[in-house]
Amino acid sequence: MYSADIKKLPRHFLPKDFTVTTWEKLEPFFIDLLERKINSKEDLEQWLKDISELEAVLSEDGCWRQIKMTCDTENKELEEAFTFFMMEIQPKAQPYADKLNKKLISCPFTKELDQRKFFTYLRTVKKNIDLFREENIPILAEMSVMQQQYGVIAGKMTIEVDGKEYTLQQAAKFLENNDRKLRESVYKKVGDRRLMDKEGLNKLFSSLLEKRHRIAVNAGFVNYRDYKFVEMGRFDYKPQDCFQFHQAVKEKILPLVNEIYERKKKRLGVDTLRPWDLEAHPADEKALNPFKTGDELVEKSIECFNELKPFFGDCLNKMKAMGHLDLDSRKGKAPGGYNCPLAESGAPFIFMNAAGQMDDVTTMVHEGGHAVHSFLAHDLELTAFKEYPMEIAEVASMAMELFSMDNWHVFFQSEEELKQAKEHQLERVITIFPWIATIDKFQHWLYENPTHTDEERSDKWVEIFAEFTSPVLDVSGLEEYRRYFWQKQLHLFEVPFYYIEYGIAQLGAIGLWKQFKENKEQALNNYITALAQGGTRTLPELFKSAGLHFDFSPSVVGTLMSFVHAEMQVLTKE
Image (cartoon, rainbow, N blue to C red; front, side, top):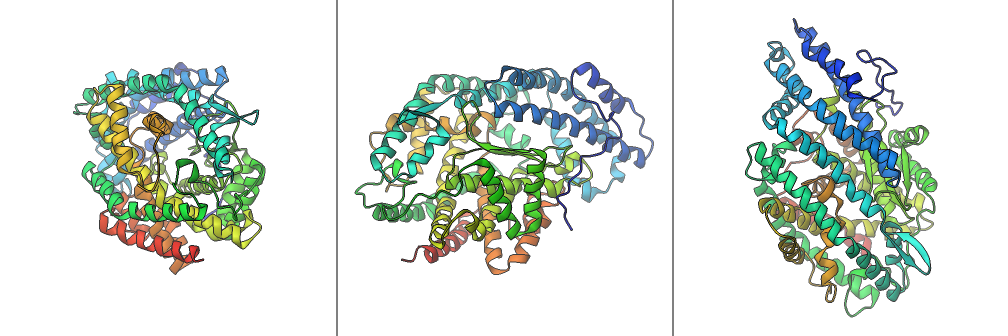
């Protein structure tokens, strides 16, 4: 039914060879849309299709500029091309977007549209009208450029191990080494390297914080947190639900983290468990080496996806053929990993920093899940229909991590290694929750208290970080590293308030995996059905399509954690 043979959207409104070069060449298309007469429902539907085409072209152009810049942060031309788009194109398009939104809402034929199909789209349009402020345009443009400075700073961070230079992503592999002294040395070298930029990152964040607060106040909000909840379209949950989630993590998940850490301490044979021990392997267990190069990672991931469902493998194959993958870590490349949807081409782009570790496999199948989502939503009628809520987007990626586990044998030589990889994954599923709660709770405080000092920020971070740190972990003597540990989280700089989604989605992914264990085909069908709807349904409706309840209360969290815990115990029986 679904095909990865994705086709670039045909153009009917813009010339086929049109590229975004200057605002003067782009503006006439906005003027046409704004001045066009709409005399019937059919006229309106065509007008919406033309807006959609313009949005797709503009979005993809901006995406490519960002992709190219993150792939090579040391290339000034690429940085300037991105900055030009953010400072000269985007800000001039925004007032037109607002006028077009108002034209749509006031059009008498809008009420004749299929209200079921257009409900979420029109709801978002009304929200955008409510939030739009002319005075925020230059601030948003400045922020878009400033946010990318984080990647530039972090991309330059390297350390030396045994006379050889490594990016921080590449150096992480030493934390899996059996030599505890080496692990400690690398951990501290990474910490020291991060501290070298602590003032620069603090300054950058303070500037972003000030601008974000100004945007919120301009739009009539008390703080940026309240503004951002509306701007991100969080129609279906409130800050209070996030606080409930934080509590659920403390009550239902931290005890499991303690159990995992106690077991790790025992297996490593150490008196105290230190942060540089968390990725280490017992003496009788080798570090996993699932692949050596980015090319090998691609081939094995395609094979893994093929075994799960051929359509999934076809998606990765198509991206490979189109050159939409940049996987290896290297100096000058921005940190992190992402899947970037490309609205016109259809096949997205996967960017990551692979260094031959097990975590890279997880990242690849995670971003692969996002990619499948992009393929499934590509055929939806309008570009806006493909803008799905982030919470369901992360279900797509996190469920793929769990679905694909049985097929990870393509990365490993033995059943023992596969078992070890699965155990690592389930540990990660559980131990990531306290970090999600830490980052989310910190963000609430940051934006509810926008006039705080650098000192107060670090003090609050230390307090919240300690709240969600397992007492089994000995962090003594590492106070200075931990004080600035928040600076390693790029989301705080680049995509503010985007983090609770991982927690909500992880719960959804566990729910889907539970279905998968009971009825594989049904679970995969539910997964595909939900993702293929893009953003045309509300978040609770999308969860329902996937056979899930949209609920992250302590009781639901407890039930799902019991299931994961039981699966962990099956794997770890010795």
